Each structure stands twice: as structure tokens, then as C-alpha cells.
Image (cartoon, rainbow, N blue to C red):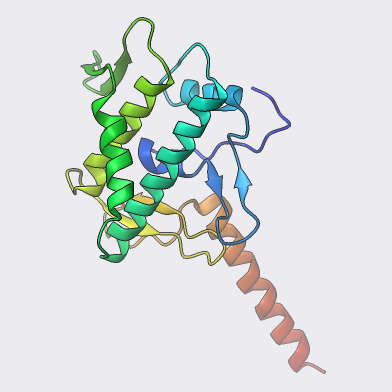
Length: 191
């Protein structure tokens, strides 16, 4: 993979990891799949390898990504799911020619058919979004506590009280800011 692009943020949940290909939505947005080839790279590391991607397919992917983000955000906050987002997610899901298969280790993997395309991979992501938004999986949708991020993530922690989409980025950034604010308060009071 090319190093001139920002690193992927890969989580354990496909659909919310996919929405993380655009981060810092309320700050300085970071697009992690700016080119068709970069989407091919993300799909490959997510177990959905495809041979190629066109600019039109990249736009379909971005439309799905934003629809999942909108629906997951609404679900996390208890709001009504946006009809347009539901339509896009459902449309991508029903068009896929992918199948769930069981590995020898007892895990589910997605298998794309021969000649599969980006649309088939997007169908897998859409199906995953349906599962988590509909509450079919053990966990809860939440929004990152970082005011610049606000990414939707799927919390599978035992207490279901996770605050950050990614502790290594948003969580550490917030801890560092609190630490520095505390140090400024200590040094400011010593004067």
C-alpha cells in the first residue's frame, strides 16, 4: 500500500470501520480513500479483495459510507433513521453476490464470487450495517466523544461504556489535551 495516504483505521466491525475511511468529520476531515486504488487497498485489508475500482464505483462507496454514517449516528442517538440512508444501504445490500462462509476455525468470512466487483464488496458492508443498526449483534452503536471526530462505532465492551472510536487516536488526543490543560493550570497557579 502507498505510504503517502493516511493509515486506515481498522476496527472489528466492518461497517463502522468503513465509515472511518473519512475521519475528523467535524474538524479537518481526513479522507482515507481518496482514489479508486485506495478503496481497493481498504477492501483487501478488510477481507473483500477486488481486482479494480472505477471512479464511479468509488462514488458509490462514498455514498454508502455516508449513508451508513448517517443511519448509525441516528441509531446511536435514538433518532429516526434517515429514509435516504436506509434506501442506499438496502439497495447496496440486495445487489451483492457475496456469500457468508464458515472457516475451519468457526468464524464467518465473506466470499465474493468469481468476477466480483466493488458493488459486491459494498453489499457485504451494507449487510453488516443492517445487522448492527437493526440490533442483530451483541453491542451498541455509540458516537466518539471527540468533538472533532464524532464517528459512529460499535461498542462491544462488557460495560458498553466505551467513549472513543479509537483509543490510540481520539482517546489519546483527548487525554493529552486534558493533561496539558492540567499542567497549564498548575503552572498558572504557581505564579
